[in-house]
Image (cartoon, rainbow, N blue to C red; front, top):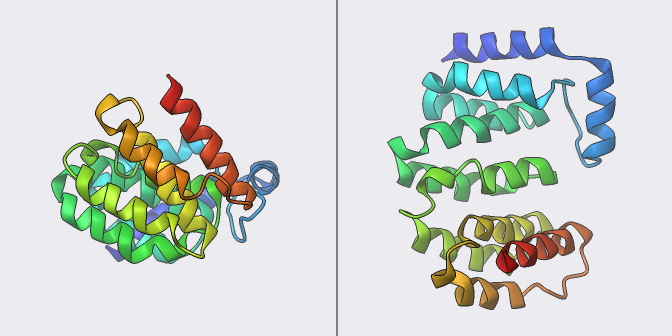
Length: 187
């Protein structure tokens, strides 16, 4: 595991660019630490290092570095079917590590998409809990989770009941998630 993590970090440092770092800071203003690596590189790394499994996902997440957390969420999405319960537990145990909209949205969509139908009950329960949190990143996460179900007509009333709990939220990142989810429900 240590070797895999070390390899990933070496590649991230090599692929880093000051220009991308600055652009990321502008596009995701709450990022505290980042290498400056493009999303396309992260997508390639997710495919390349998915064999690192949950251990790599957990190690990357703990770093609190933007690209490492994004990569963790992307790898999780590739391996989540191997152990759906572990995936849900990872999310529940690490939701406090979310500090920006990009990591939040990637974890809530790509990170669980392949198990969304199978774990629908658990994900709706998690969403209900998250939208009541004092932490606005939790509220946003709870809403973005529901985007996985927005096309399913059977879940519309359930989604709308959760959405009503935060549709007047004043936090800008939550307000944007409300608008996004409402637009998905209209399609």
